[in-house]
Amino acid sequence: GDDVNRLVLHDENGKETIVSMCSSAIPNPGYLSTVFEFSRLSPDKKLIAAEAKYYLNDGYRYSTVIIKNKEIIKVFDNFGAPEWLPDGRLLLVSDGMYITDINGTPKKIDDGTLSSGPNNPDLNPSGKRIAFEWNQRIWVMDIDGSNLKEIASGNALYRFPAWSPNGKYIAFLAHEGYSYTGWYR
Image: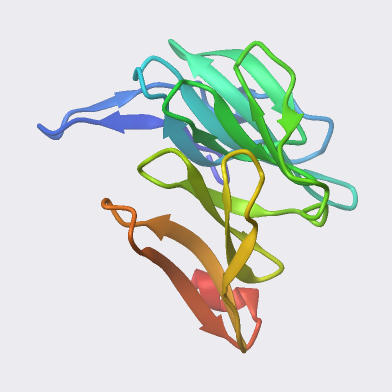
């Protein structure tokens, strides 16, 4: 149907396997169906962390769902942009950066500076640094929340940072004019 989706694994031989229920099967308190925004496969390849989005009266809301064998085993309400750490814990965003194991309660790692909502974190290959977007800029910090540093700013909207495989570079999108409509062309 429109605006609903499933998560699929695609192997190196081109075989696709559906690994989730339909997103519309995820209940939410809003009036539109839940959709998956993106997903991450756990380091042991047994779990999927997926960002689930729904609309509630005054705007979009996000949750992270943990899926195993097409079943939701955990929901982190009001947390999005999941990123797995090498040790199997999750990095999540909300009113800051949080880390949790799948059975725990997320603990904030930043000092409160990021309260206006970081997004799209990407973990350095070493597992020790995070690149993310915040206030339309690209930032980095250590996994313990220290050494927060802005690395890209200017007259553009900066989005979706991604570390290079060797951890020396960060690629990102830059869109001039601060218009979100340009991302969807």
